[in-house]
Amino acid sequence: MSEQEQELKQDQKQEYAYHPADLIEYAMDKPIGAARAALAIGLEDADVDPEVVIAELMGNMELNQRLLKKLAGALRKNPNKIIGEMPDRIQALQVERGLGL
Image 1 (spheres, helix red, strand yellow):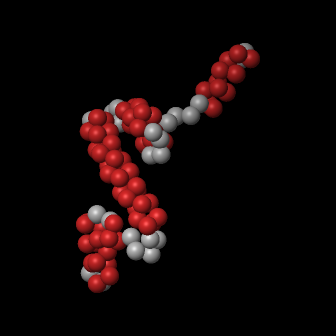
Image 2 (cartoon, rainbow, N blue to C red; image 1 turned 45 degrees about the vertical axis):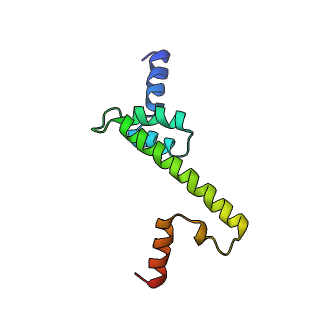
Image 3 (cartoon, rainbow, N blue to C red; image 1 turned 30 degrees about the horizontal axis):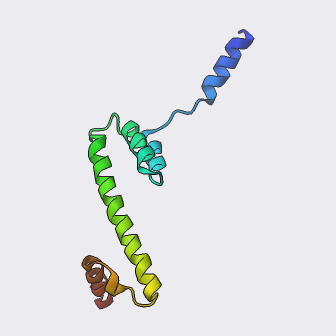
């Protein structure tokens, strides 16, 4: 085997074969542009349209951002009493937890 063939074989061994889940994990903490590209490639062969997943994530990220802003504002007002500033769903879950339900 020539030296070039040996180098080529060595390079092929070192190549990383990605798994689609790797791209999804990569997308978790990325801005939406990079996340969109990673999700589109990662879900390319899936039985789910990547645009459906991307649209759902975009909606959830927006809700999460609003909630985090609301939480930060409540904590600045009074770090001990934030429940009144939270959305009704969170308030209801907290009441259920307090009652042991």
